[in-house]
Length: 177
Image (tube, rainbow, N blue to C red; front, side, top):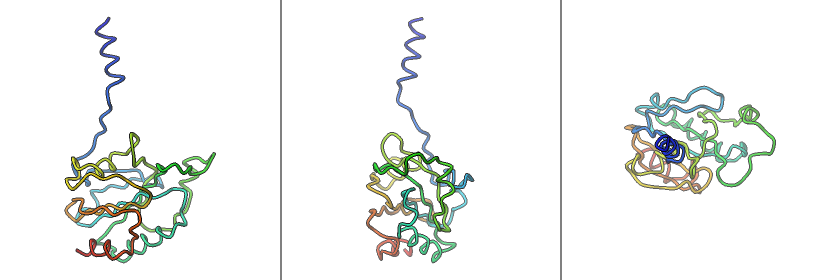
């Protein structure tokens, strides 16, 4: 009986290990519209992953990211991840279903809301922010619109501060490199 209780105690209080895939191409995430975004379909293309606020669909960065997505169509995929990890409530009383109906006026895929910081961090953001997985560097998501650039081989090659806009020459040079 004591062994069973001890085992149960250890199971309940043991730290949870999220499954973090070894490759970006192993991720499948839920899109805002409920379908799947399968990263294996992006092989051979650059991927720009951006955490985006789900309460500010009119932010000019959405339009800039969409223009970038259109400009490099076929060579670059932009994937937005809706997040609200920065203490700004996305709207009292609204449900996830109501937010799914929101029109972000973009053509690039937008994933459903995920955690990007702390203990609620989604596995894809663990991969993006921990050198153990991404083999580039440890980073922290500082604010909305932080950008992660992955090359055609599926390797994280750059992390851009939220202040770096989609039309910034540094980001454009990294995409064209």
